[in-house]
Image (cartoon, rainbow, N blue to C red; front, top):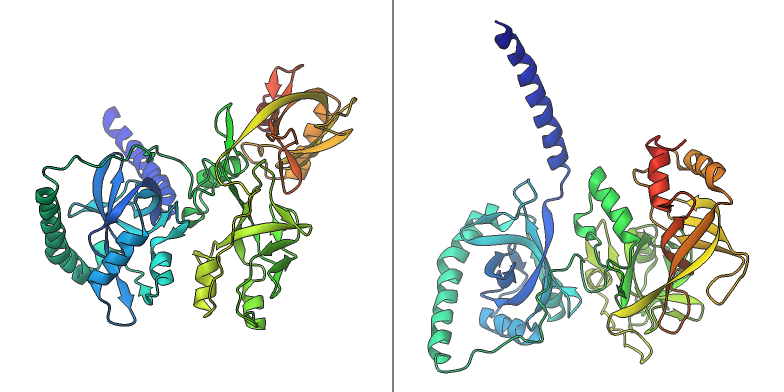
Amino acid sequence: MKNRSIWPQILLAIALLLGIYTTATSQMGPTIATTGVWQGISSHQVIQAKIDDQLERICLPRLEFTDEIDQQMLKKTVQEGIPTQNAIFQLYHDGLGRPKKENGMYYASDVFLKDLKMTYTAYLRKAGYKFKVSKTPAYEDKELLRGVLYSDHITTRMAEQDKQETDKDKKPATLANLSTMRVTTIYDVLPKGVIPPRIRKQQEEIARRIAELKNRPYETEIVQIDPLRWASGRMGLIREDGVISGANVEGQKPELVILPPEQPGWLTPKMIGELNGQPCEFVLHRYANGLEVIQDSRYLVRDIYFSNWKITWEEWLDKNGVKYSEPDLLPDFASGTIALEVKLVSGTFDNLRAPVLCQVNFATPNRLVGKSESFRVFPPDPRPNNFTQFANSFNDMFKGSEADVSILVCPDGQPYTEIGQRRARRIYFPEYKATLDMLQNRVLTGKLR
């Protein structure tokens, strides 16, 4: 009788756990970013890829072309224009964060080609094709699947057999110069570890990881940064010459400039209003020394990704009937990864100014720091409900404490900055034998009062 009375409690606990789990998984976006290698296409609908060193076929949603197309010509255009390269596949998942695989295929909403720095669908549009992408995933489109499984699949297999016969006596080609290393970035232009905007949702864990990784341009002691940097913000007012004013970039309001289209009168009041205030990711170019490119006191924007619309600057222009102008790379612009040094400077902690910004004072200014400097740091983890209240308490406890700052330094000896703010790899408090983020955590969890 005693054992029987326990069962209702056990069942209730199981139900609660299932409810929590269902709520968490329901907040997950429909796709997950998966890195791999673009190998080619079987048809415009089916992509050949290498994921986790396995050859896979990936099916896209239906592409509804405006006009009749020559599929063989389209396939030739893609084969000649998209070489083998690392890519990001936005794969639909099973609700548990695992890529959905049915009928021997994965299913994706789109693919980002890292060398070309554009999506597969953007490439097709750039090649002159006009179409709409169905909002229905391919695995739910029964008519599409029939065509893929019974036509494209057979065609692909026959082509593979023909190729095997042709290449039987030939030495297989190698991809010695192609890296198949899995990365954790969205595109080549994202700092390592950043979660793609396409899958950014509101669940707490992903928000925490984005906040942490977005502010980390490195992942090992040997600091390597990419030639381009993504910075979250909101669009401002854009002029016809490409100057953007009033934009918010990571809490600051610098003036920006993007290469405008060559078409005179391309910008309309409606387009200006549509862009103003849009959540987006600004893609900022870096010089070869690691600093962000500034032209005429304005930060150069290489591209813009509009988070709500899930389209790039080029795609937005195309939507408005404007031809995109490809920016040129100047000789002093970064074209590959940049190695940064880590240097230690000692000072005294002054205050937390924002969740990712703190002030440190230095008795002896040098070429790396002045008398007082602001440093970008990790945000508190977990996040305080009231940051101002938390910062006031933290500052009361640690203001004036000795602080060793490990700052990032460019190859030419200048301090590495992001929107003009120095970046600290870590801030260490010798008296407490702990870093800034460790102390913040202790204060937040009540382990240090």
